[in-house]
Length: 134
Image (cartoon, rainbow, N blue to C red; front, top):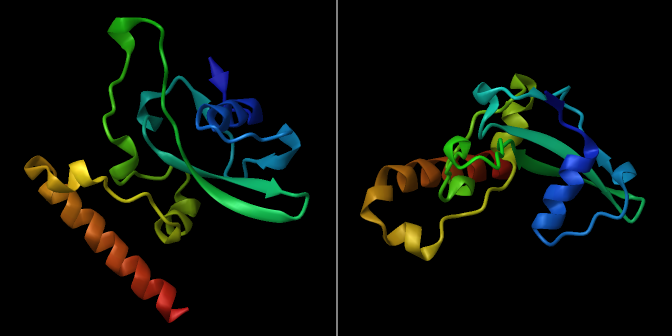
C-alpha cells in the first residue's frame, strides 16, 4: 500500500525534465490519495508548486499506477489528451478551467480520434467562454 507524497510529485516532474529543488515547494491541497486503487487510475488532481519562494502555480496532475510486472502494466497511449475525472470533486471546476495540452498533429489526423477531438474542441470553446466572462 502507498500514500501519494511530495517526493512522488517531485520524481514525476524530474521524469518530465523539470527540476523541483525541494519538496517544500510542493503542496497537495485536495486531500490524501492512497492506493493501490484502480478506481483512481488516470484521474486528475491539483498540486501547487511554489516558484522562486513567491509565485504559486496550480499544476494539473494525473494518477498512474506503475508496475514492473509486464502482466500488470497499464498501457495509456496519448493519455494527456483524453479528458479525465477529478479524484476530488471539489477540484472539478478548477480542473475544467485549467489549460490542457492540445492534440498532436498525428492525433488530429487520426480518423479514430474524431469523437475525442470534438470533445476536446467543445471543452476548449466552453473554457474560453468562461475565461472571457471573468
